[in-house]
Amino acid sequence: MLRSRETSSPPAPAASDADGVRLGDIVLRNRLVTSSSLLGYGVANNPLMPYGMSPVSLFVPLEEFGAVTTRTLTVEPREGHFTTRDDWSPAELPGLLRRYGTVLRGTDSGFLNAFGWCNVGIEAYLRDYYPRTRDQRTIISLGGFSAEEFVTLVDRVNAAVPAGDIAAVEFNVSCHNVNFDFTTILQDVLDQAVPRSNHPVILKLSPDYDYLRNAQQAQRAGVSALTAINTVKALRLDPRTGRPWLANRYGGLSGRAIKPIALRVVSELRDAGVTLPIIGTGGIRTVDDCREYFWAGADAVSLGSATWLASYPGYALAPLRALRVRRVLRAVRRYSTLPNRDTPLR
View 1 (cartoon, one colour):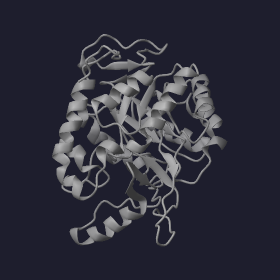
View 2 (view 1 turned 120 degrees about the vertical axis):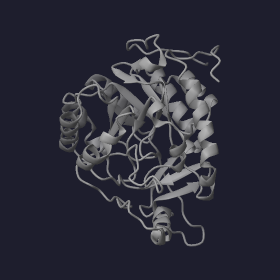
View 3 (view 1 turned 180 degrees about the vertical axis):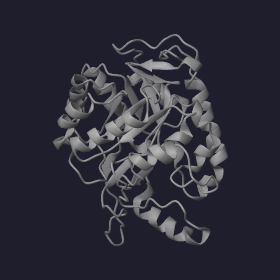
């Protein structure tokens, strides 16, 4: 059955778009955000070669989104399975593209990635990137391998960013391409890091873990919202050699292929009585996709690889792809309260 709902959190105010919408204690400019990693840190060092950012994003107004989510940041810089370099010369581009081929591949109706939390580290982000994105509403994605690392990350964000200056921090404790079992640290992360944060905390859920239990843990710990879902653990092999496509063997599957899974997870969270606000993500490209997520029980929606990624030749059409993104943004930002089955979301 199609559902129109608000959570038990304070209802979204009947406000203008300039005033934003409220998901519990998270204030967004509207109900459309961007997913982690696809837009890097929200700004590129070289506008002609926007390393780490989808070329499509250069043709859309990022400051008009509900929030822009950063690449997952760790305590120290991390190469992961890729590289943090952003000074590639034109002569080096073939080598860079070969590197991309080991960590990002298009597959049936989606993408496989295994960047392994490649990032410049929290200090460099706060020093070199965050000050240049103050016109955006920001969700800072944080990742670590212990509760102590999450505490350190939260403390550094607290010290650099006054309360209210960003929408939230997102705890990524569900990434598959860093080869770590996050279930072993989740409760400690919630118990130790959530209370220390001066900013609302979003917990990112994976369908490959016990997401119902994890959501209930988050609710008890004072987490402000959930992101559903992270990528799905997946594998592709070269049919001629049997070798894995990705350097990490396994990767995270995203895009249109996981949309039915993500919708199921959102719906099951609501069926299980989870009342936290939910940001639904996975395979969203159109206004109709957004409607499905809202009816499943999401309070906001996030654009990920289905929107921002393309084949290399496909990026030549980035301005046209951006027009579709702008249409979705215009439609979603009209609503400070959740649309229902009779709302003409178009």
